[in-house]
Image (spheres, rainbow, N blue to C red):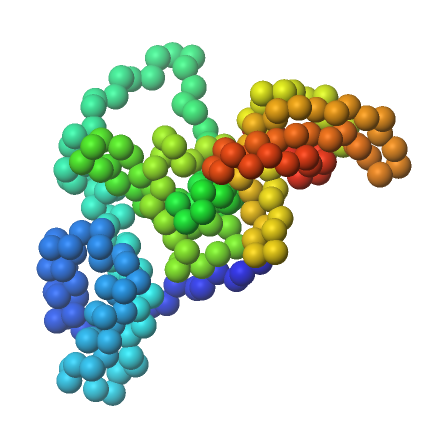
Length: 231
């Protein structure tokens, strides 16, 4: 597993902070891109006012913009907060949904595969009204963070199946299937087309599941150990 990069504490000058505040208003979410942050960090590092101070790394610039965007979304005075509908009071006996112990997975836009979520960094609402969250995937650093559509790309974590649970899988089920190729080994959504039930032996479940991957329509026979079921 890739070790996550610790957050550093950069020493920005007052002038640099003012520049970043102005840029945040002008470019918005573009300020989180690696290319934008690299250009800005190089500019800061070359400035006369930084003589005798350590150079600024692009990840420090990105972290500053990320923190400021999160402050905007969580501030009670932000436009996002004001536009939220008034919430009804909790009636007696009604419980708030506690998701502190839940685990989530999110779909990457790069190849359409699902990865475990390490943390939700911040959120935003697009002009279309669609909510998005910025996700850090488990086992990956900040350079792999992505904005993910909440409705289509975030869900409760899929559950690995034990050999004794093969009967829980039925034809037509949506499953998360581990696909291993020469250049990748990742999880994709698939639907079960056919099941060949077989007697279990010392190796465990020997049933064969014919699945069709949702992202490309390819069919494949797999064993239970490659499947995860939906909660």
